[in-house]
Length: 246
Image (cartoon, rainbow, N blue to C red; front, side, top):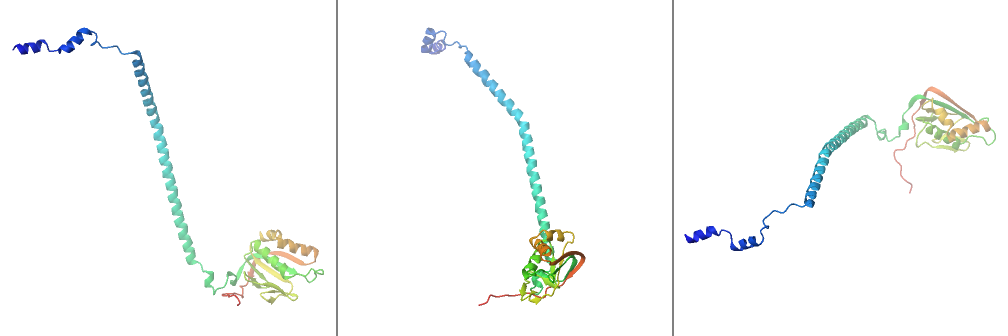
């Protein structure tokens, strides 16, 4: 019982008691400094500003995200439409290929083998009354034919002989030949194409200007007339196979 009374009367350790007796103000709370208050206030202000900036940015971010999504969806829709158009065009091309007659199926002959009829121009060349050294040659006729192709002609014939990609226009003696068949004067060149555009385009080609020069300076007959309907025959010459000489 004496031990219990002693413990209750001396609950505080003697060492702590002696320290308290020597430093009676040690247990008093020290006041918070002004610097600490300032730091707390600044920290609070910064946190508030950060929160406010984040809150204000959220609607803008949402709009930008919405616009970006709309742009991506629009691009995807455009790509899908382009793909569908590509599929449609391919199907159309395949359908046209299925109905077209290949040139190779026509006994190996080129497209000039077919006779054609349509509007165009009729050209007459004659050097019967030409001045000395003004006679027409194969080079003059080739220049005119090339000029007609440049002017948009779709088919050309000379004195009833169809001109194709493999047609030879040459001079044999004093005669001009087409595929080695001699032509007689006058030389009549017929070309199917637009009567509205061929004459003007022809006059502006090197071949057209050369024939105009011969007409004005060498008394060569050179006339160009439009026709509502011109018929050109199919080519009789064709080459289906060729091999080099050994």
